[in-house]
Length: 199
Image (cartoon, rainbow, N blue to C red; front, side):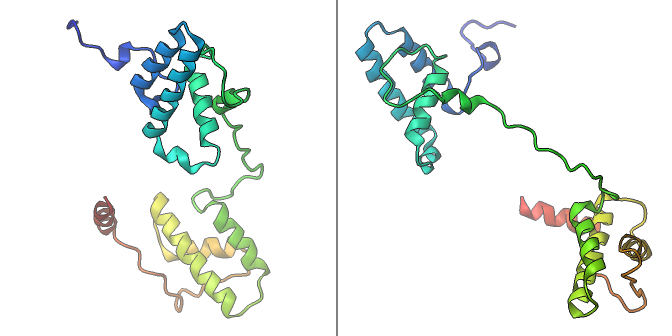
């Protein structure tokens, strides 16, 4: 169905910086087509003031005016011929994507526990016995149980946590399940209610 006069965004040219909106883009396109250089500059200054009101949090940056002029340059398709009040030679760097972060080469033995818990295993192996190590054992065991509950790997029983803790600390840490008490995990329906309250 084609209704005359209706104009959908899907039919329009995509915006390079959509946070400024289509009206700003139309103003920039108009400024590019102006015949007089001084008039183009006056128009560009007005557009930059409007751009600043569209994205007010940009003022949090020290060099926000430079950023606005860089954005104007890019949105004009590098076609706006004016005496630029700021250096726009580095404007295209805004559009470059960062390099992907390298992942650690050594694999995580048990992904559901994650790297931080594995680092705790290493720390527990080297710590001398005492109250500090006992507290770290308690925190680590409870985190392991929460991780098992979250990732749903089989049964979430205390013996599995004790077994994994002993295995990954090379037998240094042995949980006595007759004396050790895990923190109470919320039931799945309690967690759902808690998440609903946050929204």
